[in-house]
Amino acid sequence: MNTEPLVSVRTLTKSFGHKVVLKRISLDIAEGEVVAMIGPSGSGKSTLLRCMNHLESPDSGCVLVGGAPVGYALKNGELHELSDRALSYQRRGIGMVFQSFNLFQHMTVLENIVEGPIGVLKQPRAEVYEHARHLLDVVGLADWADHYPSQLSGGQQQRIAIARALAMRPQVMLFDEPTSALDPELVGDVLEVMRTLAREGMTMIVVTHEIAFAREVCDRVVFMADGEIVEQGEPGKVLAAPQHERTREFLRRIL
Amino acid sequence: MSGSAGGKPCKPRQDGRGDRAANGRAAITVPDDAPIFSRRQPWTPVAAVACLAILAYIFWSLSQNPVIDQEVILEYLFKEVTLRGVAVTLYLTIVSMAVGLVGAVILAMMLLSSNWVLSGLARLYVWIFRGTPLLVQLIFWGYLGIFTPNLSLSLPFIGTLFSVPTAQIITPMIAAMLALSLNEAAYAAEIVRGGILSVPRGQVEAGRSVGMTQFRTFRRVVMPQALRVIIPPMGNQVISMLKATSLVSVIAGADLMTNMQRVYSQTYQIIPLLVVASLWYLFMVSILTIPQSWLERRYGQSTARSTPRRKVRRTVAANSRATGLVGEEK
Ligand SMILES: Nc1ncnc2c1ncn2[C@@H]1O[C@H](COP(=O)(O)OP(=O)(O)OP(=O)(O)O)[C@@H](O)[C@H]1O
Ligand SMILES: [Mg+2]
Image (tube, rainbow over all chains, first blue to last red; front, side):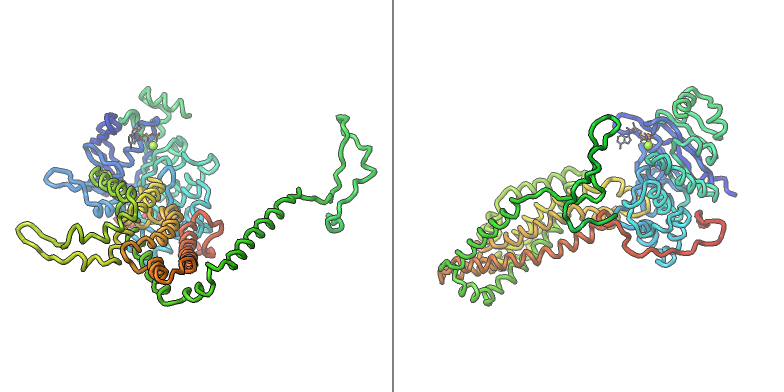
């Protein structure tokens, strides 16, 4: 077993204008670990997640995935931003699921899923289609392959979005509040898919407000506030007996 | 459901008269199968007939008018000079539109660029080419030789690479295409820009997150969705362009309108030849709207359709317990 963390955030700082959104964040995530990130609105959870696949570029510090800095090449101790092509290559290994699904509206469900593997990875079509249909089965939407996203419910769209990310066979999956745009009765199906994924050993970083999910599925809960990690640890400990007042206050409000 | 005899209203049931609701007000008894009559709109057919009558009168008086000589119209409708003009007009329209579109996409990307020099230059271009009359632009390109008798490319230290008389390169046809496509690019740039802006930012992020390069994201994700917004106004542009080609008569192009003008300046059959030209323009507009509706159907699919495109084919689920979601490779 290697003990290198799969994802390693190193003293990451990010500001928008004068507002410092991430303050020297450091965080290590091991392979196969499932981490829940919770915290009040505006605490920087999404920004941290987006830095992990370079949708945002940090002001200082970096994120390593699989030992390589995301979005940068290390040359003589300096980080140089990667070319568009190299960055795209790197992103193949990092799956992302968005709060608002962001399925390609002009493609059918199946086309959404195969677009990456065929168009980007240049994998053989037959194989990709077989894998895609298998993924559709896994997310429970095998009958919807030829529908367009606009014909699906939010919960169904989000499960397709998960399948689309999985089709790239990523090393790690990032989820940014995957269920918070959904009607309550649709949340369960999406969480069920994520539960399956966690069980199979996928490394997952999940920004969520679903405390029950964090408690039952995640290996670790990270509580963020004001751009800092206030406290982290096993869900049983952090959620049941938080050490910090801010955590207690937050949990009181959302539970 | 028992049917009442074809549309004849039933009489209310006599025995229903004495019914009273609990609150004391008289209850109305509506027969189960009471026929329904829509409100009459007696004036609509009258108006329609009146319009038809007026139209018929106009056509009749036109056909009686000696100025509109039907024989001349028929004679010139398929004459070589007309057909040549039609071909040139179509050619000018299609080429200028195509070149204009390419320019429009480039301009739109410049307009949306975060580099203010690029966006500023694009805005300047749009401002100039939309703000001056097309006629002026046509004349400018047509008489470019007056400003610069020779087109040459000179580089410092290397010297003149080539130099040719302007008139030799900028023929009336080239001048017409230049003017039309540069002008079209300015108008279409705004349409393309609007189309690109109509695609939500999340679509780009989703594309990038599955490893697409910027260009690929633009081509596979943004553009197909922007087209839905771009195509309808672009159809208008094509029609405007088709008719704008008639302006090239000022620089002696050889389009339909110029040819017709040339003929009637000698024969003085102005009205019949203008009718010939109009009939052809109408025909060409009708032809050019066919690809538009086809494209609209093609790119409107995702929202317009409510049934799946292909028959759903179920694959047999893998029997293995593990779903294989997590790849083995490292
Ligand atoms: N592109 C941006 N430009 C300017 N400010 C931004 C941008 N993105 C985020 N911010 C600001 O950064 C702060 C952190 O935002 P972020 O989206 O990371 O919070 P969050 O923890 O995900 O909150 P939420 O739970 O509401 O999603 C907020 O104050 C937000 O206003
Ligand atoms: Mg957020």
